[in-house]
Image (cartoon, rainbow, N blue to C red; front, side, top):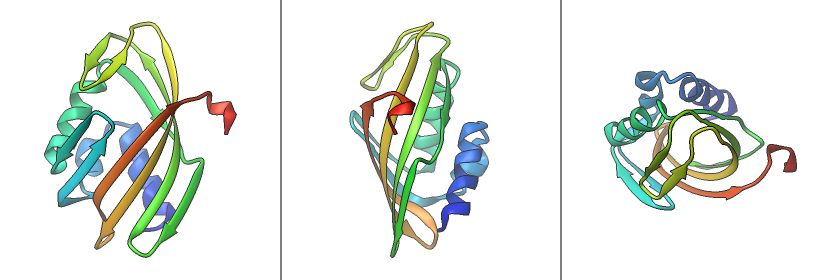
Length: 128
């Protein structure tokens, strides 16, 4: 996995191309969010399919470190909320904009995401 591959993955994510996004996951991927753990590509995609009709989400790479079968990325995320979404420990209110910085630690297997751990903080994108 290299930066170009990660950028392609994020392009699929930002454009809601779920099938292409899922191709980056190992069959037994585990995605750990602060309030939720998802197992398998289908569970991850199902969450985004449920979430994205409520928000316009856009992420971009701010910082990236790549090591042997590991990757750490700082992702500023902007959420423009269309409809309330209050589920899975998330609380997004319609009409608001949220700027959040995600810290993602990826463990890789055969250039696919095997384990994804995510932490977040509220921040302005300009803080980076």
